Length: 486
Image 1 (cartoon, rainbow, N blue to C red):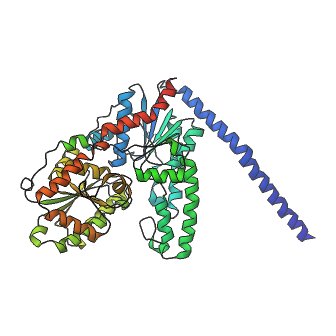
Image 2: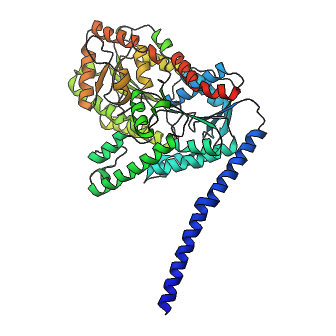
């Protein structure tokens, strides 16, 4: 009898739990979302700015990388075409004053942005840091981006929301709750079919740790997790009304996952080719007969700086000692956070381990004028990131007259580097030995052959100019402003 009563209580409790859950999902949650949306609509109606407010979601706007160049080029384009628009930048760079950010933009990217840009400082940026999520990193960062997006929306409700970092999970929030028009410039899909393939084939990489790659059960579990995450990522990404991507490689993956090709536009990122092409090409004598190899890349794990050092180690073994003494690898980049600074220090230690420290220089946050000087004095541009989404630094090295050796994958292979005889504008490689062999070949070339590649490279980069980016960007987002004016 007592057992029957106990079972009845259990069944009753389960039924009540189901009823409460159903009430929350089908009644309380929708009502809460409607009330929430009405609050944001009221905020928009009461805002002090009567002009159109464009919000750029870029929590790392002061980092100084290629993604930040796109942000400031877009801001500059909108300010030029629509001077009465009020621009808001959502940033997590709490330590940087607005004037400091704009001064750095001028120094690093040569963009003079009007001071009327408003910065909305976000205090929850740590929620999108990979270091916060040692496991299920993609899911943790994506949920964290929603939490960060809520802070942004509470601080300022824009009319037009443009994400320039790829936080797709914020799109439904701003579109359906905030009532904003939503556009995105996506540099790199959060998850790609290549990542799924690496997990399936159990390939070790910075996104697939050794312990998982070596275990078939963990690999199967991770593959299921990736597929489920990819399904949700595809749904949230498709909620953007205008989708801009930076390369053929990114376009292919976004179309495969988000499945909305009709509203996807390929717009190559802005590269400072006009000024760089005008730089005179220096002869070997004018370079003091030194052989400078330059890499321009943030000190992030995916940029694969260790591969550069391994390539240099291999290069030392195949060139004569008197040639090696003339070679210098210049690593130019920036650090977003403490982890990046630690990574750069690890690279310095690795260069010492390979006995390369006298031939390798690290330059952090160099001003634009110094970057130009380094590019002009260099002979080879080096790039080692697997599946780089585009490669702004590659284009700028080519425009400056460097012979580029890039990774044979992603945007560099699909959009930038041509290796066919007669139209060759650079080289592609994958392994350290291959990089070393190609660099040794470039070093041993006669000046006429090197100049032929440099000339073709310079002629091939005009399609990546600032002017073309700004024109295509404005053409793509024009419907938002036209509808607002109507």
